[in-house]
Amino acid sequence: MHNTAIFQFKENRDKYGSLIPIEASRDIPFEIKRIYYIYDVKKDVTRGFHSHRQLHQMLICVNGSVSIRLKTNLEEDVVVLNAPNKGLYIGPMIWREMFDFSEGAVLLVCASEYYDESDYIRNFDFYSEEYSKKYN
Ligand code: TYD
Image 1 (cartoon, rainbow, N blue to C red):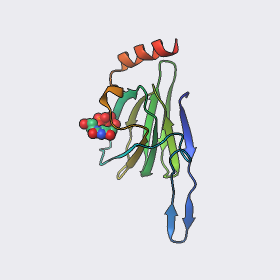
Image 2: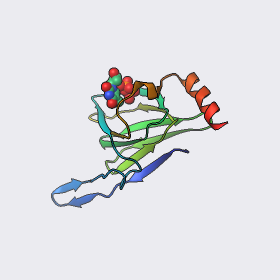
Image 3: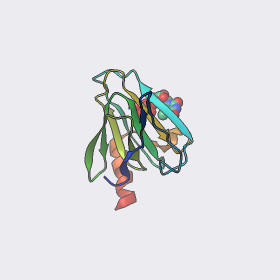
């Protein structure tokens, strides 16, 4: 889907365990201003239901697994994040829903800006309208 991409981070695995480094601008395509993580999500819960106008994000499920539904006016896709070395980049104007959190899942999100509620579009009809204006 446009404005999204799957990233594969390099795993340093040895007999003592595994380590994955992530460097802003080098391993992901933006400067990180904020990180947050989502955890303790019950099995039947779906979260998200929003798009951002400007924000760039990298989602990494550092433990367990979670599914991400991505939507625009034109496309719909589901990405399963089920390995700590897999990242999902989501750029501006992509609707996302997170569901199917496994027991103990931890979803780490790296974001390009500080938290700003005015960057959110939380209603799909409004999103759809803004998307049409931007891309048509
Ligand atoms: P919310 O946007 O509902 O989470 P989701 O990504 O599942 O849609 O955020 C949950 C709460 O956390 C809400 O009250 C806003 C707050 N919040 C912050 O204070 N800072 C942040 O960086 C984020 C992402 C959320």
